[in-house]
Image: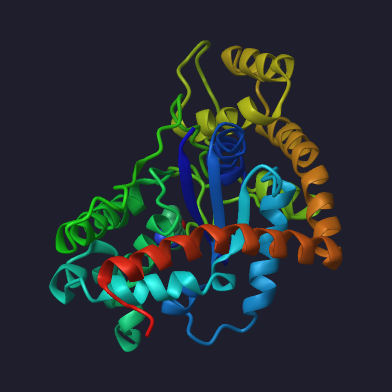
Length: 329
Ligand code: TRP
């Protein structure tokens, strides 16, 4: 049993790719570990310092994760800004983080390039806040995608540096959490690579059936096979990859056969695919709506999460203060 921490971005709806990828793994992960999941609303201010609807974003994300099976009884599910101890540890870690190393991180350089008018100190110290999130629970594992590997490496560096500077063996160096099987990658509907938010090629769990139909019917295809049993081009393979996770085996076999026989009609395939996606998303969408209209439940969940998270965080901050040498008179 490991202690696992995972931060969730506070904006952006979940799409099918998230659902069949990371989410399925999170749901499994929480069964076997001491998991802390939190919505990283402090972090969101680094790029959006004056959000239009901070609370609404957090609420939507929370409702979506709950609807997908994150269980507040099994794991500690909280809002980052409900745990001010994180901010204190962030302050202390900032004293041992060097501007040079922060300036060299890829995501910082990316953001500077994309948004030169908003290069704030929070953006620069994003990895320090992320390190605080993780080591405040002395977590040993963090599930990260490729884009977060460098941030996790920095968290290890800050943990190690703290130990060295104060000559203690206190913080654990967090390692990437390895999901047993390879992560399922859901392709986008535009025929290029994987489903993603920025790509605009996704089907969202919260999309209404009509929207899903429209998106799927517009998915990129080709002009169809001309030779029997010819190999599938990637754009078509992609549609079957989505089918693999939402449709019955007999449906998949049926359309594969049609393809092999050069009798496939992409319109029929898409219609079926849309229907099967809707079958998966509809109950989730209903749960999201249910949960977000239940403020008593949300209040209970976030209160419980904050209490559990603060207990663990306060213990660490107290010990860190002792280690550094803060003392009461
Ligand atoms: N940086 C992560 C992302 O963009 C979110 C995050 C914040 C996080 N703090 C974390 C992830 C701590 C893991 C652990 O997705």
